[in-house]
Length: 491
Image 1 (tube, rainbow, N blue to C red):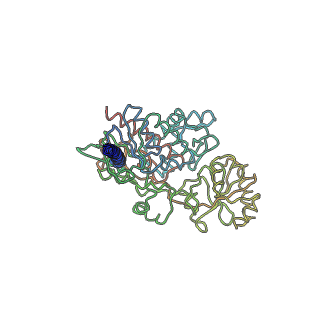
Image 2: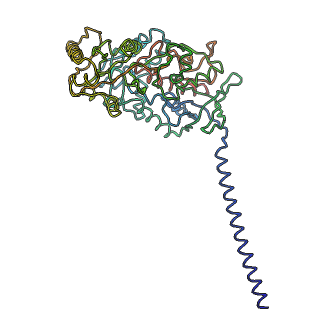
Image 3: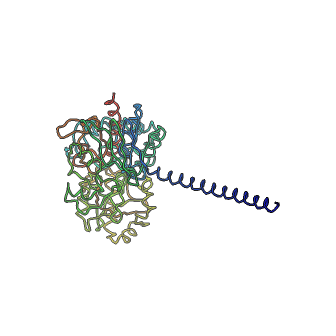
């Protein structure tokens, strides 16, 4: 009997242990199933809905989103890259605006009318004057708006083609684009605007003569829809799409680009698929001072602050602050189709942006003009004479060789620096046709209901050549207008 009881006890214990093991196994299996289900659910992308969809997180897109949100509309921004900013991140020179509080504090007399005249002249009068007037009349307000939300635009310089100092940038001439993006992005986050990174818009939904939203893909290729009452296209230009560039301007075949990899014309492709009209697509600008080896752009502000361009004979060959197309042609006419941007320690101290070029190893340096000339393998006597003549022109306030209108300082303080530069594709002036309210027009000249655009994706603002500093004015002014118009059209 005792033996039977003992066997029964052992059996009961065994059953109990087995039950516990099975229970644990089932729990583990259940937990694993839950984990697997969770992983799968992460790949299930649900359709969304909002009031306004903005495509692109450059300056135009973020400005548009903030104004739409300020109009009490729900906003979602989609960005195909893994970071915000687009080409705006690469802007360094400044934001052109006339009649600002900053200019007045610095004693600079300027007006939107002068800004308008410079822009039309710089664009070879090919610009749409109505769009230019909107930009130049509202640029000062754009600066005040940016300052009001936290931007530092306290330094004012001059860029090519401008008749006055109107390029606004951070203290000491620090790069302006990355600063503006930081401020806009912080404000977008503060306002609770949702930004979907690594998300590529592939199609604009259009039914019953109205825009209904977009189709997008996440980084894993999962497709979903975002239904909306308005779509704002702020995807930038097509400067990084060599096939599209050559399609519209064969002479630029083989050129490098200063554009970020995402500037491939997606917005143009999507908008034209639903009937949007295009304007001046053949107008593509090269930037004259780009490092040939790596495509890194040297801001026009270096020349604006006093640098000169020299060729391999050690001589100047052009007005350094002429329009970009003219300066680009001048460099291409030199030996090896490149030149050297030449400046001294005084110019470096006047512009913080130069420190980055030195840190990157882009400069050749010398304690004297002759030492630098030797390092560049150019004629030192010619270079010394060139600098001597230039400094005399600065004193006389007249450039007798090339009629440079603004020579802010002499080149006379060691060290001396040079950067080899040449032209590369920089800005696509052509794009979607819009009206003064940033509504995208169809081929009959009528607004496409619910579709808006701002920034480099738009054509007509800059005509045949964009002035340095006008891109940032353009994107903020028309970005804000696009956001506000999208709200007004819903009321």
